[in-house]
Length: 443
Ligand code: PLP
Image (cartoon, rainbow, N blue to C red; front, side):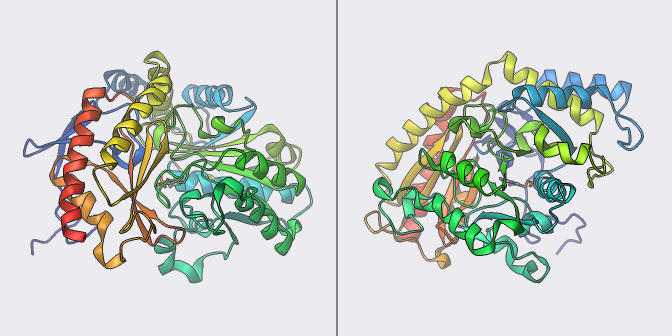
């Protein structure tokens, strides 16, 4: 084997080299085109090679690319914080800029803990999350994640934060009929709070729509209203992990807008800079920051590259582009078109159990039997096979875990908001071919 130096996700796998990207396509150095139906890792929301972003990047780089946040602030960072506060539900947020979604959720956890410390209640430090959840790969973020396969190797180093039932009506974790369950998955939050004692709990974190740990699982109406009521009554902060759903992805600027929720803290990443530079953010409402402002005055977190002016300028240009091109509305409209096409396609594929999602965050879950919803055995590696088969056909899709404890198969389809209806037709055609071929292997 040839000596290599770059650690890739799979060390023994060959990854093509990408030469350039334009719109919804990436092109490798052999000239092969890939339709980016996953926006990479649900990131490249405005597509590849957008000239306006390249121009903004060049302009900022020609002024200054880096300043250290403990020495200086910068115009783009200040402006981005103001812009995000204006856009976020309720409009009264502070921003803490970081470089990845994991850092954003971990910073959210730290701000929540510090909020209670500065209020003189240091015993409130646990962060509740849901069994089906992924909040990032760093140890704090993993401690809040239910994603078993990503946690397993590091369990001795993780906080054993309690997990709550997910709002997953396709396979109700409470084994109830979703039309008559009385929001029992939301009520499970209260059960867990009572067992542990709210005096030990700082926050509850949830993805508005469950991403990698579920495949675009949308909660039932009324779920978040109940969650917010429980959090408020027990004095627990609500953290919305909008790393995947944030910035137009679901047809609204923030995923939580679908349910009229104003989270106490919001984590953003991925779509904030649409993949052009690393940029993520933790937004905290005035009332969350207040005890810190009146107390130590220091949010105890930070990274060398936090609030990087170049990345902030890129994020501002991405927000401008989304507004100028009306891409929030595009994500909603194209999302309807995509889900209708996927639903129609599913009629011809017995192994598709569920089609779901909102805006341009769509999910498909696969089953061995549609009636019983029995998943395929893990030994069939259905999701991996499907992602690989689609890849060979020049179609990028995102793998997810299906099933409450990750025992099932699901994928996410999340193309850039700029995708045309003709490109969606091509996407569905290639996906359908890949599913047909994989079905023949697994059935
Ligand atoms: N939170 C959610 C909901 C995510 O989907 C992800 C990544 O997939 C993360 C956090 C972690 O983000 P990053 O990979 O940028 O660290």
